[in-house]
Length: 222
Image (cartoon, rainbow, N blue to C red):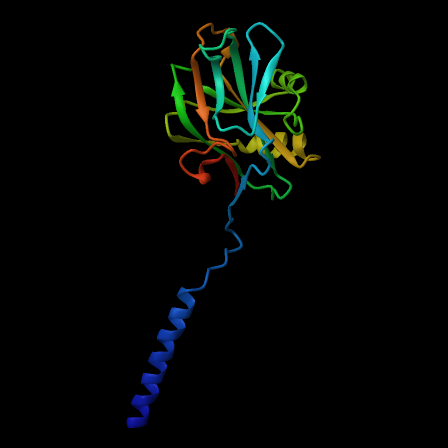
């Protein structure tokens, strides 16, 4: 009888130890489950904004900066002797060489809303390469673009836009199948028809994330 009690006590202790070991192990995903992967901007020259002067073809590219990405209609500093009005659009390049043909969701953190801008629109454009040449990038924002979502960003809030499945199966695979990078453009709805400057959104970038480094934009697979 005593041996039986010892045996059962040993079995009970072993079962507790086995349970504790299992609880500390990470469960492997089942065959019908998906894991998710976050892809951040790796190169500081792969996101920023491009701004065209009002009624002109000249403009600027703002990269590797301590200022946020501006999307919309803004004016240069009032202290500037030659104040200029600008139409600006955000450009973000993500390395999708490890994409596994799963769903894609785009995330970007709005840090500030200035004035009363129109809705934010999100497009795919042809990949321009590293963002250094304004004259070659701006034309891409007016042609060969594919709209896939919009939003009304708020101060200090994330914008989350899922790429429609039809776009994943066609646009992403066809447009970027031969490239490592997928390029996303942010712009205001019909911003070129507005005349009121001082209406724009500000976003965190790979270089500008004032509250937390994890606030920089990313895409998620799965």
